[in-house]
Length: 428
Ligand SMILES: *Cc1c(COP(=O)(O)O)cnc(C)c1O
View (cartoon, rainbow, N blue to C red):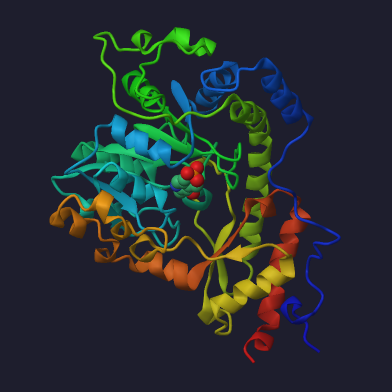
């Protein structure tokens, strides 16, 4: 008789009786806050909730300024724009990330340079950054992927040496800390997403963070039709453009990239929950990683000692087929999904061969000239480590996996061991 859940055996976790913790998390606090916004009639931008959330998120992230905008894609785009990056510039981006990290570089008419990641952390490899630098390089966008930290000491040292800007893509790292400094406070600008899948969510949304007041003013203007910010705008009253210019009365071209008070209301409540949620996910993540080290054929993503707060996100680990009786990773993932009743995915597709990073499908927008067209061809980049991670090693699960108890983690380890013990069933 076959034992594995994928063949009808009893699963390690019966999610009909014992479901995983739910995501997103909300309660009466969110209901009250939403009704408050509804009744106030202040539904649009720069209202009291948004102002309050910006203040709280800046404080939480340890920066002078945090500014809300529509999502964690636009955050990257306005960060690039605020830094003056565009035509003729190159921006170094890891090859393993969500497509937005690179696509936004093209959306400002600059050239993304895809570089490989470190095998042990899946984050941008500093040695590869060095190799990719040219006289055109203007910025680096490290991504703190699946809750691991890019090596920010190395990234900042390279940036300093070559006079480059650093935009931290913190879409997976709300609350993470490197040597006591929060993710999003180390580079010139931090970029956060509040999409439903992230640590902190309003369904959609994003923030940029910075310690530079001049950049903050630009970022604020870029998300608000080019209007310059003024203290008076924080009252939620839409004044005429004349009140918003800089000291010389100048504006910048932009569009409406603003969030609503409803989103800000949810974010304020979510931010109150985040420290405890992160602490629980981190305790469970550490515990599960320790269990993984005892099981043949799997290993943990390396966690740098300089990570003083981990902010585990979408638990990921490495699979080694040769130490797992030769079982293909696809079969391993399907079997694990059946045992645990939770979706088990591969990592992001490497950007040199990613179905959603296809700039050549938009010639009317991106074919500025033949040289640029060639420069933005993702296929010109070689990313062997990203490819190996995606094709052979990556096992990724939603962070709700980490939101329960240690006993849940024991179950995950048990499921992996069960698949190891019964691997031959899968090889028939
Ligand atoms: C989610 C994500 C983004 C984009 O955020 P959205 O809010 O979905 O636009 C950018 N970078 C990374 C690494 C992400 O995971």
